[in-house]
Length: 232
Image 1 (cartoon, rainbow, N blue to C red):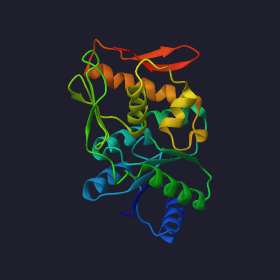
Image 2: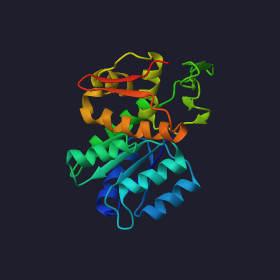
Image 3: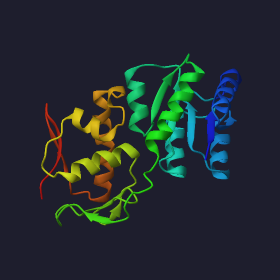
């Protein structure tokens, strides 16, 4: 599937992206508002969304959350005129896959789209085996084939990077992973991520674990060192 949804309110920018993506063999669909973009997502499937943060009828970050609710782990590439670290962290924290600051080269956007699609493609040979990771005290069950994790009997609705972080911690309970180690395990291009990116995703991961088991706090912070899964 080569459909790419472009959500951008400036026609000149959208036209440039449509041309660049079509040249690369994609089928771009342009919508200028968040409302129209959500309607398009309900009508057909897409491989990726290119999402402008500054839309006339919606905040791009909030719209990304709605896209996640509708389409799960559909990759999202943010476009923005803002380049501050805070904006980038917020975007990554809610599950964005990449972040491009205006002005940008259409070729660069096309290259990033292809890179995201390469690294987010699910392995065809993934095993459907259920893999019980920990003892009763933690109650984690990892289905590696479906890339799903349950905690305390509840399915965890995880973003791609939350899943990879938790999968890494589950594989070695009590081992302390540095931020660099977690980046290497969860991000295909760890050099392109910030140190605070791991902290941001751990924060959202903890919130989802608390929702499943309010009395549990399975992820332990080791100041100046990193994170671990508490040993049973």
